[in-house]
Image 1 (cartoon, rainbow, N blue to C red):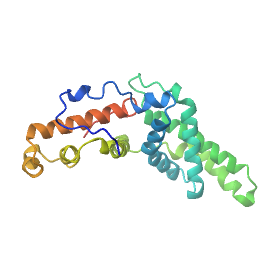
Image 2 (image 1 turned 30 degrees about the vertical axis):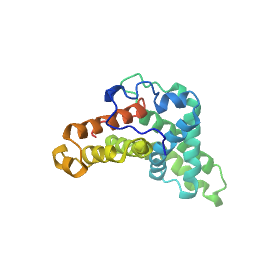
Image 3 (image 1 turned 90 degrees about the horizontal axis):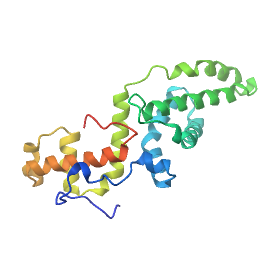
Image 4 (image 1 turned 120 degrees about the vertical axis):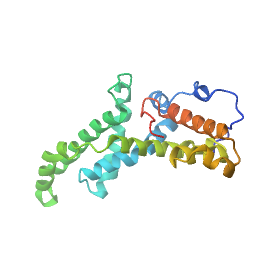
Length: 211
């Protein structure tokens, strides 16, 4: 558990509370092992779902996911998140497609007795297996939720409860003010602080909207 928790008694404006703390992406670019592990935890389930959509067997999917993230780690410096249309998810998806094709290429080179013919057919189809892009908003919402799990312990329980009930459950401050013993303005501030932290953590990786 983090030794530093953020409470509503802090006087620093929510937008600048974490201004001096670099994002996960920037820390990973500078070979921060912990930042890299957090990125894998956040995006791992998404990459795994892509492998499943590409019909990769459960036994092999874990290895392919590792290959994808290995490629990401080697090419992270090439990702340009300064351009408006470039998203980390889209860039990651391109790398995933390449590694999935590589996987089926290796499979197709095996003797027919080991499924080589079937793998060859799948290799031809692999680029199309991920062509139909699922709802980007749904996938990025999942990324945000997993990132929230990683920062939860940085906040006092009451601050987190105020954020969760308003941002995630969609409740109005007036509905929960009495129950959690916080003023409506304090509840709004709690939501703002957690979102500011989440945006800082995910800067360059995903745009935090819809919360």
